[in-house]
Length: 611
Image (cartoon, rainbow, N blue to C red; front, side, top):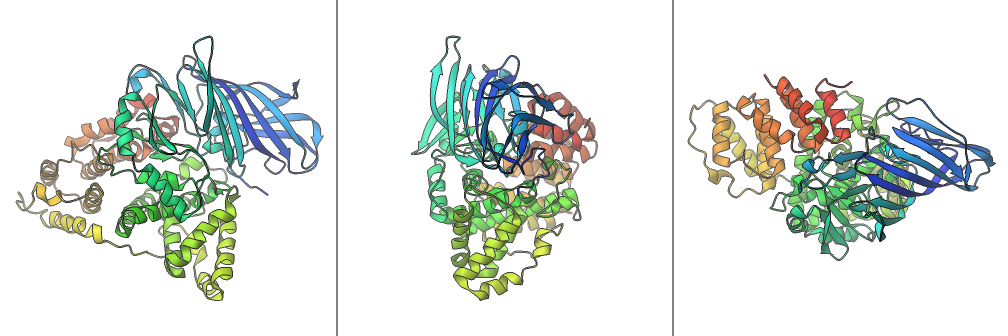
């Protein structure tokens, strides 16, 4: 029986198998308006009503077979929206099917949609719409059973004045008399509602592989096509490691700068941040991550948000396997070292005893967005990395990971399902010896324990040694008024990722004197750097040191880059820095419309500005 504490739908009585969307995009009213047709099936007897999740949606009509149905929209739950209860007008027995059509429109409070004015785009001429439904925002865009426990197919007819793209395969387009176009889509592989995605704008596509097109505004198309040229190699490596790619197309959409995440694994069309366009292909690890989601998260899905680590921990594990095969094991281990630092920062942000630092947190009454951090990613990865070492290495564990996909593809699972299959696979293929090893794992500490993992994994630090060495040199020079032993040559041979790790090591020190930070900036060219990951670490070092000279540059970066990893962290750190609180709040208030609603809500909480 599906359990989801963050959905108000009657998941124990009904399941949705398909949704067809017929929607018109209105950039003036900033609404999606039309209908959603839900194919439902009773999974219990005596089902007389359908309860759907909605949030800030205007319901116009509900029909079944053309006949109107009675419905009520409940008072809004602060976190989960308004339950839509539909009287079916008849009683369904288990296995009975029905098609319910809901006429509706989104409203200006829709949390899934961000409507950008032309001035917020690269080209500055046309408006732009994009959606972000994870975790529980699909319900603000379409009335649905908004739970990852429900896997469905979907199709759509989207009428729009500019090109529309979706997390589905395009099946055609029809010009309309009024100058708009109806774009048609179909997603034949079952997926959860949080993966429904739409973008509409002045978009151009460029083929970058046999099953991949990169979409973006024309002004960015050359840079994007160059940056993501290795996409097909990532997909093929994933297939070698796991199973054949199941989604047909793997396209990329490079969004405007207000997109709140590094990437979003929308099937057939990964959404990515423009902060990946570093000009050196150094940040395409995010693409490896999103491709890994094609199996982990999209095919095998968490049952509810309490088991989110099954999506993200497995995805990071596969992402690093892909990197290891393509770039060498030391690069994958280097990525794990960077991830470990992110996990430490998340634990410090929440506090080591906070329930959200557990791998399997309780989210009853909680907004899943509040529990979003690197914990499910990196703590989940660390558990799988530990298990691989503990059970005998890749030759034991990689066949298991492939079998995990084969066993659970098309299903939504929880941690108990995962653990039971791990035990049965090891016993069947390797015997009692592996079961005995599994019995030695402290499952309670790993899954329910808060704070850092109970076992500290050791990663190959070959690529980190030079970073650590240079950091120590700077630390030892802190009491020298004008150190002379540093030069631009120090980091000449560093890869962009090594520069990131060097700066992370510096950030772990007690703050260096401002004169040292000025010297470091002058020698290493940190302020003008284009790479967003390097710029972000440099800004965080300056904020920790209360280096006020850099505050305006921090405010500028945080107000032009909507990726939460950057803007949220920087504004929070600026708010806590000496004499920085006012600038942090002013920057946020002035640019609030730039941020996606999900990001704006989180930042407002951080800065004490929440309603």
